[in-house]
Length: 386
Ligand SMILES: [Zn+2]
Image (cartoon, rainbow, N blue to C red):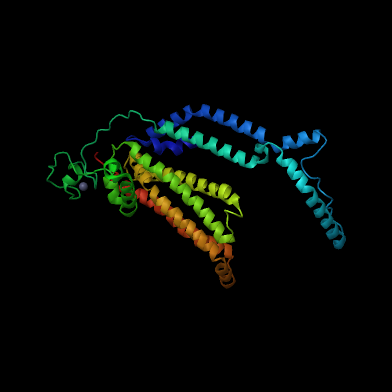
């Protein structure tokens, strides 16, 4: 249900939200056999990579894969205890290389079980999610909705109003709503003739800077492939921003070079950060669509989900920008930790909390900004005639 809910905006068409949700639920349900395959794969992976099994096998052979734990019992006499600790550490240091060599002789998927499991879980999770989104977004026949020609500003029914006339309700020239040049579609839809990069930049810029006007260009009948492709193209960028942000914060915080000193940052921490940025952006976008739909339902305007989804997809460029700024703020907060500690002694609030507020408040405003932009864009699109 939750996955279907999440995927509903992806497959939304010119129909009621309820119809979109029912469609998403049906398609998600049809994907459930994949879950069985996923569970099977994860189970095999867990059994295969379980280090405990290999440790137990060695013990059966009469040897151990793990160095014996030296006696570290606490004693009343601190001096004697410290001496014993020293002896224990020395004994362990001597034994460790031998055991390490033995451990490395085990299969690679046991040595690196944590990484192998992480990769398998990620791949299985992505595969399932991708399957659901592909199924929900698959082409389908949606009966055409017959709407009277209406004013694109106020929604007034313009039947009988001449093209040279004005909307009797708000005074907008009728030609702006019904003329051939009204609602031309977004720049991205003309990318094949105008150049992909140029169209991408123009669409990204106007979606963020002039979201209401941008909404007035969005077409109800546009092929969903347009906005979906735009959406998918921004995902690698979002991953990259999360990845680079994590590396930059690490360098700012430790002053160490991850290339030479901490390779794990490059292929563990940073990819996880990139993945988290990616997943939360997708969830955030779908959630923004749902919120916008609810907002317009309350105002008596229905069937805007497909329009809100288009707006949210074209605004993914805003998320790239916003994530970059947020990562920069973390870096600044890490660089200025001395300043926050100083502030702690002045105002009496924990320096870490101050740094968190320093980063969290603008970031929260940025998130709300995305929601506001999706609503504004949908506002320009809500009475679309074509
Ligand atoms: Zn009007």
